[in-house]
Image 1 (cartoon, rainbow, N blue to C red):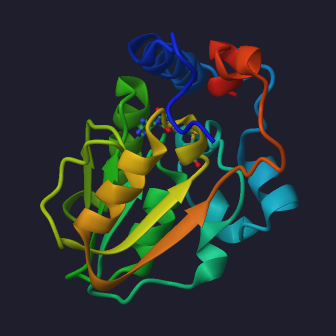
Image 2 (cartoon, helix red, strand yellow; image 1 turned 180 degrees about the vertical axis):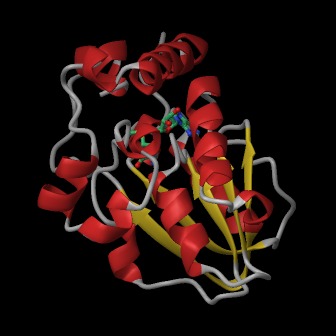
Length: 205
Ligand SMILES: C[S@@+](CC[C@H](N)C(=O)[O-])C[C@H]1O[C@@H](n2cnc3c(N)ncnc32)[C@H](O)[C@@H]1O
């Protein structure tokens, strides 16, 4: 199975298309018609806790576009350092930050500027500023030191990542020995045709 793409696959173009799609979505979630999004979807389809979602700013949850509920895999230790890859507007980032104690912290990484801006706004609105650090970056080149993280969480992101082998190698690099990965993502049960793998709109979906 090709993990990057068929011959002629334009990595830079795919990354640009993905970022542009999520830039539009962060600004207006209804502008990207094919993606499930928002608090009602998280609650009714993915089993997120209604009260916890309601306590987050609407500007955070309205652009939630996760594909499953990674919090069902367990809570981090209160003092943990958690990394959220592709944190988007910050729904999972902020839910995790609220579960941490005063010495815990969560680092969000996302390549899309408006996503990062909303995530930071949400953290400030909840008074979580010191516990939340949002950085620009890609899953394939994580802006973190080696063995620096106890838990990596990621929701609906690795399917968008062009070089998945590199992304898993980066996750392995930043996790401390014995660290955990809470992965919520999309799995295909059959291989895609070449024209499907070359289609930017399908990558960004
Ligand atoms: C489907 S959204 C999920 C956002 C968030 N996890 C949530 O549940 O709402 C995918 C996110 O991944 C980000 N993203 C796209 N390509 C990425 C990459 N190569 N590395 C890290 N994040 C990426 C997008 O900017 C977007 O915020």
